[in-house]
Image (cartoon, rainbow, N blue to C red):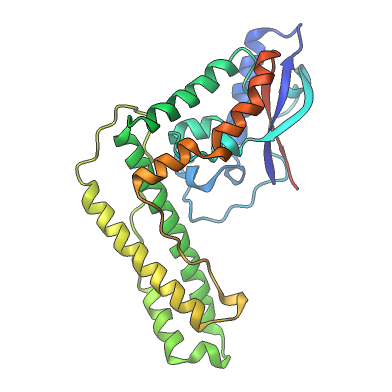
Length: 278
């Protein structure tokens, strides 16, 4: 499954208001199927990121006239994940990027993303960035704990010798007893957001939970060698400053995307959001 941007121009005889209304309509319909969206953005859509969701083969775009019927497409495409997966960007910006960007909108949109990254690299927006990073780590912990509990719960029905050893039984009880952390409210895009007053205490609780889950996961992997009954071991993330540096200087983040899209901007192209199953 993939979501792409394809270089596009607008048919010259299409009314401006009509094309912009079509972009908004298709964006809203696209977001009605969260399976096409990064799961860490699901809370913005009122969905629990721990839920399983099977997306349709093609996102719904409505009946009748389609946006793509009024666009001239160039055979030049790139995965949209460059932006929607750039986790340092404000969450609402990443969600909003799952859309078609018309040619006259693209230069300003690109500058908005790049200016944010440059400012973040210079030490700005620390309150928003830390709230975003805490949110992402909490979502990741809750998702992996949910998966781990599913696996060990199902293993209770296994009668093979490995599943009934005292070590495995103890680990199973330990993992199932781990408490879910409350999902934080997704931070918005308030660039001047101050640091949250209780964040130190919440960070401590999260770090303790992460360490426990990772320790139990490593012990489970050592005790249970059968691939069917494995789950991913939680990887501990770097400190906030290192995370910011990685995502503002990483060559596979917006730097590559910028090199791809700038020649298209110069030639008057926008980006049509397309979807496919691979």
